[in-house]
Length: 72
Image (cartoon, rainbow, N blue to C red; front, side, top):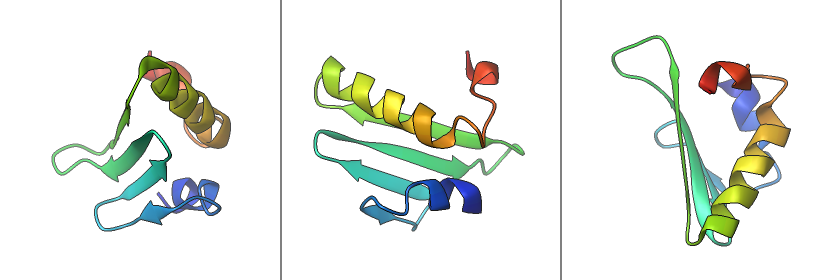
């Protein structure tokens, strides 16, 4: 979790429940599950283009930290 927080150190964030990263047109949340030993990740964009940008940015920032292939 600390590595994910570090990956977004240049972005506006909240760490109340995991890490929530604010983008101009949406957000990304990564937090530990309360019931399983996994990280739960969610993202939302106001439009599809915004969501695509957020997902691309998240992948670029944490792709080396988290095995994103397991998410497909």
